[in-house]
Structure formats: structure tokens, C-alpha cells
Image 1 (cartoon, rainbow, N blue to C red):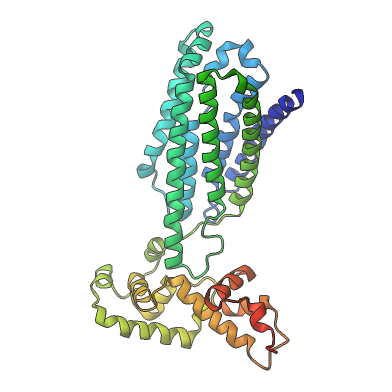
Image 2 (cartoon, rainbow, N blue to C red):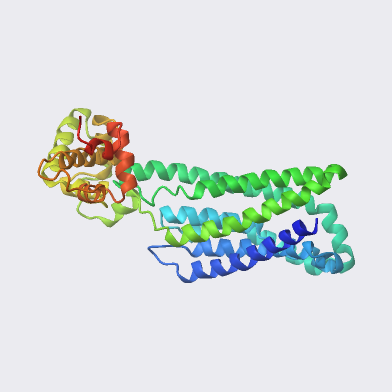
Length: 376
């Protein structure tokens, strides 16, 4: 089917060009607030890695067999870089500690470069056909390993963010999970392809082109998805790092661990009194560090007390106050009929309407719109 054949080549070229372009853009506009450098490197490497498929698709590799071992795959380098990008959104990276993740990619490039220049051109095709599938299998297993590590990072991030931030918007990295699961799905496709090729199931060879087209189309979607959200994603500060930025804390980590359970009631009363008096929850960027500084206790102690006494995370604790305040405002006779949900959300500390809706449904079992409707 020539139409599908042409579509496959078009997707490949599209992915290559846009991967490199978006990668360069993300690298150029990377900043401390929006650290997109590593994502840009990943997209550029990912785009370049598609070049081999393009050359193979148009028969260039078959006519120039010296290109079979062209060292442009970057499988063992690209995905560790994606992992480091996600990790770097959550904490400051130390190159000395993290460089070990780059070793497999460096070894891959050096080894392929050596084979590219060492093996005679007339023998490269035979070498590739003998060992290429094993290389692809190892690369897919390695890639899956790092994708699973990324999922573990995101899971840990959800817990940290709920403990330290009162607003979750743009902090949960929810946009990353679909792309990771999609990458894992493509790896399954690769295993199917390897099985069909290894078993020489000729009656399924037509299916291979369909799988290739699906993969190429998904690659293009991935590039746009990562570029779009990568340009928007801010650095996510966590309690561990925020603690190093504050000097106003009056207790040490040791005292945070050593406080007796009997003191929890007293500390919790301090917290609730401060919340009622200051209405600090109306600050949409309130963190547990801010609350700890105001009360004069270590942020770990604040977290422990809230978990123990309120049986919830810091985020839920603050959002409960915001919902209660929203109910008070919406029940004010002087303001009924004059309010919009956007205004209410902003007044009580919600950064978006969706955050207000989510919290309201969670704590009240109804939407704020239904709450505002006059009862008949």
C-alpha cells in the first residue's frame, strides 16, 4: 500500500525535524524557574534517533551498507536524560551523583562508533543482522527500566507535594504519566515486531508496516506533547529544599522527631488558632514552610501533627479551610447573587476554578455551583 508507505516516511521526517527544533527551543529557553534543558536534549536525541528508520524506510541503508552501524540510536542515553529531567523538576541535581546514569549511553555511543569505523563496510550488514535484534531487545529492556523509574519518581512526587504545598496546580506532573505509559506500549509493539521477525511469520509481515506507522505517528504526538508541557512546566520546590532556604525555624530536626505525642494537642491548637487569626490559607502559594516559620516549629513537626491530629495531608488540611471559607462567603446574604466562582476561588486561595471544584466535591459532596443555588 503506497499510501501507508509514504505516510510512514512522512511521520519519520516530521518527528526528526520537530524533535530537533523543539529540543533546541527548550534548551535555549531553559531557566532556573523552568528547567527544560534536559528535556530539550532528550527531544533532540529522540528526533535524531529517528534518522536511522528514515534511511531504512527509503532504502538508503540497503544501498549504503556502511550506514547499518551508524551510531545515532541513543537509546541508552536518551531515556536516562528524560529520567534526570523529571528528577530535576523536583530537586537540584548533583552531576557527580547523577552522572552514573549517563555511562550506559556513553558506552553505547563509543562502542557503536568503534564498530562503525572498525568493521569493514561489506561486513556491517551481516554484523547488524546477526546482533541487531539482541541490541534492540536490550535497549527496550533498558528503556522500560528507566520509564518505570520515572513512574516511581512521579508517585513519590505526589506524596511530597501533598505534604508541602497547599496548591497542587502544575506540581503533580500528571502530564508525564500518559507519555510514559505510551512509551511502554510502544516497547510492547517492539517485542511483537521482534517476535514476528525472529519466527519469520511471513503472513504477518504486512502487519509490521501498520505497527511501524502507529509507532511513527505516536512518536510525533510524543514530541509535541513533551514540547508543549515542557515549555509550561515550572520547577517544583519540595519541603527538603525549602527547608534549606529558611533560617527562621527555631527547632532542629532532632526536636521535630523527639516531641512527645502529648504535645500534639497543644501544637495542633497553635496551628488552628493561627489559621483562624491569619487566614493564611487565602495565599494560593502557601507552603508548610510558611506555616512552620509563622508558628516557630520545624516543618516536619507541623506535618507530623497535622497527619496525626487531622488525619490528612497538609494540602487537604489547607483546602478544608478554603472550602469552609468559600461556603461562608457564598452564604453571605449581602453577597448572594453578586459572586462568581472565579472570585470566590481567588478570595479563599484556590488558583483555578478546577481546584475549587475538585476540593468542594471532595469535602462537601457537591459542586460549588450547587451549593450556591437557593434551596426551594
